[in-house]
Image 1 (cartoon, rainbow over the protein chains, first blue to last red):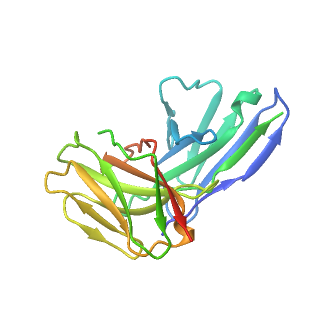
Image 2: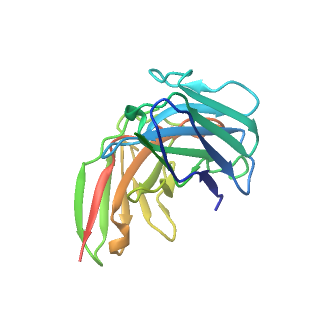
Length: 117
Length: 111
């Protein structure tokens, strides 16, 4: 199946710093990627839809200036958590759909665990 | 997208079939039923999907009722590695269309 890879898989940073997470589709092109956030013992919450070559679409309640999304190519989307604070500590997961699959399923990355001290 | 309702948790004995129900009574005619699972601290894994016919693959079977208002995911011979949270999602198949996750069912396979 199609592979989506995230990097880094885990990161620890100091409060007030910015952290960038990369999401790559390794063997297919993805015009759209999705970013999710998951707190412990909770479900995945969709944060934003990342569109290649255009601005991301954010879900209600998600601060676009806090979570910067860039989708500069058909295989790479990045999420930057700006001025991170401890409440931003979470598991961030990206996903992408394979245009040629015809089945509509999304392929998910392994996730990136962010801990803000 | 239609909402889904799943039991919060289930247990299943190892080697037995695990039957995970999902209610999607407000599903519309062009919405598919997808099942994903998430093993602790990993990204979700695709299992199976269907529109109205029953489906089977190497991982599981999907049984959709005739009125499409509910479905059941069947893991025929559960193993300890099947312990995970299972999510049922309904969604229109359209490029760029989002997946919204519900609360899912936490399945524990017991030795």
